[in-house]
Image (cartoon, rainbow, N blue to C red; front, side):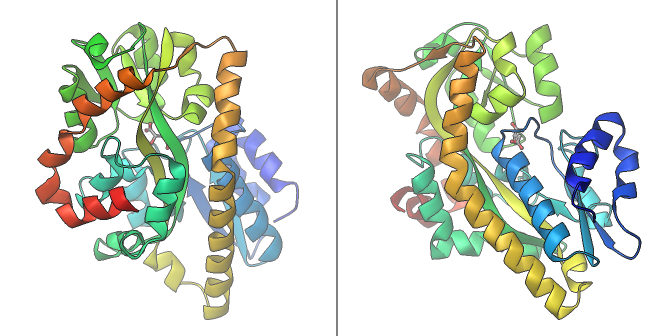
Length: 330
Ligand code: LMR
């Protein structure tokens, strides 16, 4: 793939997802990477583009990675199926979207199980975390290449949220996660599972009153524009399973597979090292763009913890008590 192809891909994608393959040279194996996030400052966007840049330079003539952001190729509900069908080779879905395959990933969704991203990264580097990376191998040949951190999550809503009872009776968009749904119910609010690409419209038209996400998603998808404010609850992690299929990996020669996996690993390490800075920059971007952020006092934050933490108990038998403790103590 020519050096300029990533930029061209971005431009072509803005016009039509169907035209980008023209950027790959003949004889190169096209590797499609589909994801749902957007903008230029989002950790997943930066990591996916960096992977493409490195593979296309270092494996020039062999592999040609095309990145399809913003759900332009596949949205939330279709991307895992597309990977199984071989219509796409690389994905990085949120760990909250695997509920129909495994309940174990629910551990990443438990409210207040991780204090911050360093805590979450320690867990993913632990033996339990590494074992969980392989969890999807039992399901139709999905292969976890690494965890990509996105950030801690915060609630935004059509009115200021200071304590959980402020959310009573409101409707919140959540990912397709049973843990997230129960967490919203614990606030005496209603959860509404919805694809990421539909969230802005649903907030704008009042189909839902609020949502929970990272600074990077709230900024790059402009959710702050259609919400009163964002509350710095820091209540939950958003992380991704950077993944491929065994069909794709096995189709590569041993040398190419090893080179590809080594690049994937280095990109993962680098992405996780810079994720906190990216989140902080996008928080500042929200303020600069006129968005409002509610900072909680320790007493107010304690109310959120006390309201949501009982949800752990409801998932203890599905996720496993030991796994929950392992994550919390990492
Ligand atoms: C969401 O659906 O809110 C997120 O998983 C989107 C993403 O990939 O960051």
